[in-house]
Length: 169
Image (cartoon, rainbow, N blue to C red; front, top):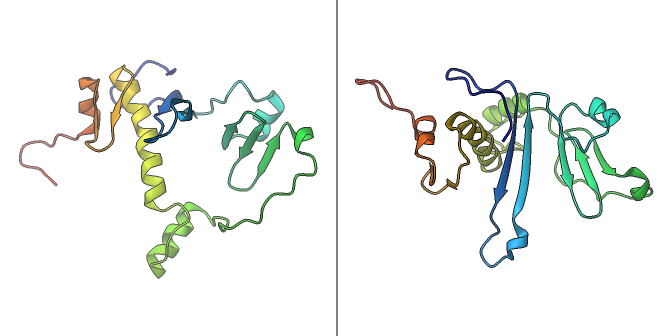
């Protein structure tokens, strides 16, 4: 993890967090997924200055045969010369009208959003755990079933809120 010194009151203005997800039961250890989260304007050094300038936000998937650089509106296979003539599959997920607009539509109609809580909850949990690890000052082995860091007791104060006496939810 890379970032500025932890502030006791605020999240960091930028952070680079490295996650490693264990393979599922019965999968080979090589199936472990490594993910690096860049926050606050930081970008992977893999991007050329030209790509970094064009892509201020998005997701970069790095594979053995190439990369997929994607955001809400654009999806580019890299290196582009290696994928010239590629015809993408027909989209089956509708384009988002934006998080806020989707939320308003879901409230009014009872319909689903593109990024429902099953997806967004796990994503938010992962991103926030990067902040927890940064503030606790240690690598976290996360127990998602019990919502605790198995190896870092210092993380507890950032995971579970302690209410003042007389207040509770």
